[in-house]
Image (tube, rainbow, N blue to C red):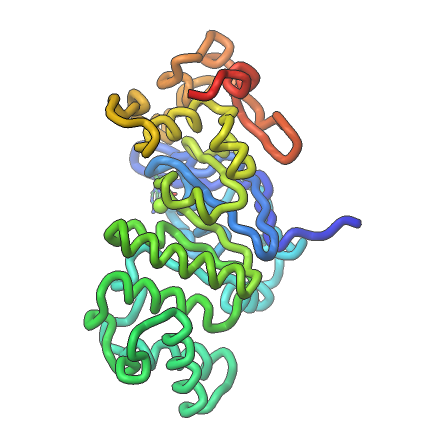
Length: 331
Ligand SMILES: Nc1ncnc2c1ncn2[C@@H]1O[C@H](COP(=O)(O)OP(=O)(O)O)[C@@H](O)[C@H]1O
Ligand SMILES: [Mg+2]
């Protein structure tokens, strides 16, 4: 039996026209997300994580952005070619997004209860009274203490963590099939980060939603992700099951990211950091974009861009030397 994935991004290409030239922000990205599954998209700042998500969500800055190739299939139907009406229905109702900065995503002059209730009034045609009751329920659901008393409070009256919970509530309101969370906890303290992430993971399981979790922080995703896609300079350089990827990375960049995460079992010693900086997207180096920073790079790497190839069942990598990396003894 073949089933159609909830979301499938195929060979997506996004460019930005800038003063410095054309920046290839997304350069052939493919991934799938199934119902009940969490895909973490990991990579340094500027690697194209948000732009990919914005293309899926239909909120890309166009211009200067332009989708120049690929497909974004929602249950097998291409969001890029379907009718505007169909597209609006899916993006408004079936896919929701959570951003890093709740303060700029929520309306500062409307109470949070009003903003939540509005979702039910506009999209579900509920009465004011019904919608307000549902708003309180949702605030309870994301564990905002004293939801009934706080329903008329404004966004700035909540702490950062509580505001992020309100964002989660907004995203959940219409019980979407897919949530895209773009660095949802990056602005929070570490302890609050963990609480918000646990809540998101719990609700994702309970509602059996697909979740795309975008982050630059490997530490955040270990416990919640099923699959990890590692992005570098607009491409996915490795995609694998979270345990396989942690145990045996196939790409030197992934290995570098892993080695730069502080580990409890490695006392003392210096923390490794990947040397150099990501390349300019307007003038990508020839061959593998990571080659200028890669200790294992050879002439082949500097002249030929490695294709994304299967390296094991269910996992892919884009590296000429994936075999050596995969076979290297774990540190
Ligand atoms: N509005 C924009 N205008 C011009 N270039 C942009 C814009 N948004 C993104 N880019 C380009 O796309 C690249 C990837 O951005 P982004 O996806 O936001 O990175 P991240 O992986 O940090 O989320 C940026 O480095 C930049 O070159
Ligand atoms: Mg981003």
